[in-house]
Image (cartoon, rainbow, N blue to C red; front, side, top):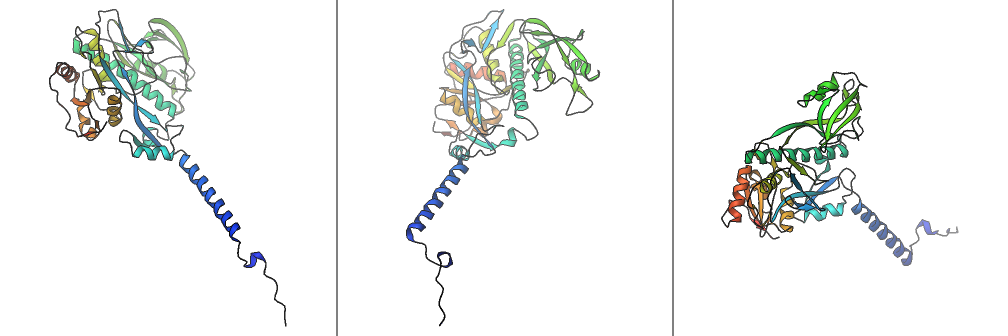
Length: 369
């Protein structure tokens, strides 16, 4: 009679209940850790939420947002708020799955794929530079629109609109530098600068006579080979035409990008340069690009700007007319939203509303604030 060999644990023995419990506990904890890590990992999206508002006829950090000197100005009351959008999860990431999911349940937030704002072939620094350029241009166009509305003289200047990082001009030329001449030749229009650079060999040194904050200066920049267009000399700046008054109008707001403050800047300039008081102590906000001819243009983030305006206490909101449909269902309680297509529309709406009259409003349904 043959002997049956003993059965070892790994050949079919039943694991004891205490060991089974420990294994399940370890598995559960491991799964929880994995899920927790996954929820906190960055996701390729950008969250758009209401940003801070700035009263363009007020002050920020003790300095007027719009500073006008060299001509008669008039006191203002109330607020004309420009509205902004806060971004989370830009080029450096930082937006987690939890953050993104939470935003889906907040009507004031929006989550969009990161590549829509920060394309893979464009660096985050270049996007930031472009946004700063658009903001600077909006200041210039706001001056032109306001002075044209007031029928005041206007002059033009050729200025640096952007300076790109890691280029020959970086840290030498600055945005808003007025270019007077290049190598002794007067600059009358933007193309004079590009033609001068591109008609000379790579490695040519250029002497720029500039006006920086009212002071005459001279700086030198040596061209290099453009990495995006080999064989083409470049120095790494954007150049454009800025508008100016025969007196000084300066903007002191920093670290804000994009063109959407143009309408409120124009309104603020008009309010400061005319007798009376457009706001009459009321709290008003708005948004919209502004063209030199006074045309109000489209912007982004209208939902966030409506929420931010009401959160700051605004009662009236000036909105580009083409965004009425987009605002439907996202107007906070207590906020009147009036559509405008021109700077003249904006001024008329303000005069009517602050005098107790009725202004046109977008046909939108309100949501709780």
